[in-house]
Length: 142
Image 1 (cartoon, rainbow, N blue to C red):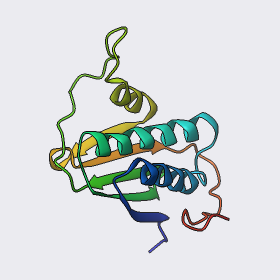
Image 2 (image 1 turned 60 degrees about the vertical axis):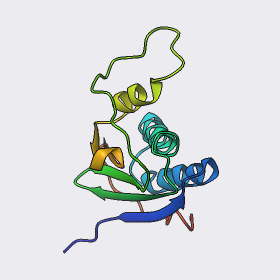
Image 3 (image 1 turned 180 degrees about the vertical axis):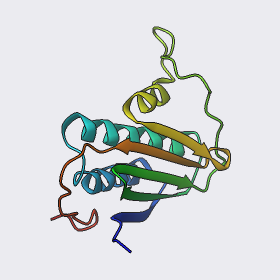
């Protein structure tokens, strides 16, 4: 069976740890995404982590990433209360102070899914077809 690149780490649900998680996922994704694709994926991960903290009221979150079949898949699971995201994908009303995160995520990803009453979210981004590069460990960058 072929090796499937994978990254998994658990973080405290704090803004500092969310930043650390975001950067770790970005380092993992850099093996397949560049430019706007990389920025989009990192921004969507950041929004999902912020939602886990703010809306999920969690104390711990686990980030699990895998690259398989030209797709990067990141799952963020948290132990909080969860939340039910709105079904609409349109932009918030002009001047609104809230609601941009989900709109941004839907527009920057190929797929966004919620499970387990919102305590787990899956973000999917297709990688462009090109040769794979070596993967640096997010915990120990090259």
